[in-house]
Length: 555
Image (tube, rainbow, N blue to C red):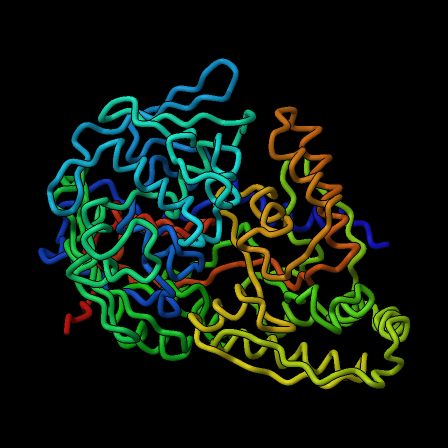
């Protein structure tokens, strides 16, 4: 067994200086915001794939969340340097002595983008929608610790007044929990539990209408620093400053043009030609990384993420319903080659799902061992690949994903003598197929919202909305449940380590590499934080062209 702890020391140096030096890279800081500012303050950015949705209660993917961060403000947000919860829409909160009651005090001047007041009652409505079975949110199981939430979400109760979410005044929102949860406020910093305006939702359908047109401009009403005013599919999404935002006077940008560019070469060309200020898709052509580092180091930002890139096996579908087949595919991957020769950009080989943090440093059985891989496949009944079915590896359209998939395909052929076809899909359809379990083998990746292993491991509990692998193990579920509500950090870490090791021993997924994201930023972009949790700080960004020769032009 390969000892995870020796590997973890390497990752600790790179990835978990996240909480110290690499937690966020503050780029282009300046205390003087009056110097040669562009009067229009219009940011042009590329952000990766077309969003699947901009309904916060149904969103899941990074492109969705990256844009929702500009238009939806939840109760709290995470400090990008420390990952601690700080006030956002809520100006403060109180926690009862027994840790079961949380009272959030909303800002009295909080308004919707149409100028109407935002109240605690709006949040109660929003939580009824979040927990409605028909909405089918990816993260809903994460909130089952709220009194009555699970019964309401699973249809055992239709009475939302039995759920522990109450408006005790116009500006005080109260949650009652079943057990103390040390991460509860951090959970309230996720865009998917941000509010929606009741009047807008009901104007275009019922509270639990999952196909409503409310997210289409000009219908969209939100509460963040920006509001969406235009959405041309596969062309551009336009966000404009929300004049009714409670902190509008400190928002410098007036408009954001966000371009969904899946092709990373196109994204890089747009940046190089001055069409965009920021390439925020997360990576650029690997052959360009060293060029930027040598010739324009001020324009490239490589940010270690608390996240992992992996391959997902459908654990309930042959041949991956056999753990030995999953182990064979996992041991046949040369992660060192995949990171150093193909992925690059500071990425490191991964042999666990979750990255180490204090009190969490699990052992992993995973290694690159072609002989052991072949033995596992033979044990599963496919000696030298004989009789192994034809299967496809599903990945979303992206040049880097394709390169990694081609290399993995070749490794599986060389070491296991199996033929794997490659199938790429647009982001929206890719996510749908994963959620519906209509795949056998697929690319996966997770970036934690609050840099904690529970954020990953909870997603593999039986029936969880993010459990695309359909992994089912009652012992694993029990360990994660113990960790969820354990207040002693040492005991909590031990439960998480045991759960992680169980997941890895059963090869529920095949970790590949630790994420870094590679961004390109023009010199005129100031105060942009490229965070380890992949959330841009739009409200703080501004443009200063005193050092820039060219400004991207609006359409």
